[in-house]
Amino acid sequence: MPIDRTMDVLTTGQVAKICRVAPRTVAKWFDKGQLRGYRIPGSKDRRIPLGQLIRFMQAHGIPLEGLDGGQVRVLLVDEEHEFATLLRDTLNKDGRYVAAIASTIFEAGVVTQTVRPHVIVADISLPGLQPKKLCQYLRSTEEFHQIKLVAVGGALTEGQDASHVQIGFDACLHKPFEIRQLTALIDKVNSKDQ
Image (cartoon, rainbow, N blue to C red; front, side, top):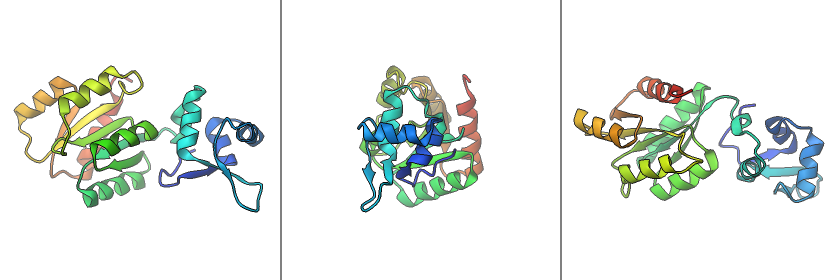
């Protein structure tokens, strides 16, 4: 069941479909305090924040694939907020992707923990971003080593492209680019090693 990533809170029925269990099982998890959330005031209805569901699924070895129905999770890291928002919205409308954005390195770390992207598209000119350290961290961390990395930049040369691939990026894309170039590259890197 594809989940709209702009939707922060889920019903027990939605959680049940994602985890492939009965709604009453989700209610038991909630009532026992295993799955955190809250009740709607004046109602018995339960609501589970998406972040809490992801933590619960990870802690109990429940595959995260149910969250996106096979869609590719993409994190766009770019300080140009309007540009990143346009890319995110376009990717999300496509139906094959679930995209999120981050405008700082710190925010990217937080979003990566929550969203678990298949592909990170990072503007390498972002203040504080050290491409080599980013690659080393992701490649050496068990939970993130499968993430595909795309370096994006406005002044990349072919030599810089090669050096970025050498340090661990899967591909490079030069700004400005068209959305079809981005989606083709996301599909290409995401299909590697599968």
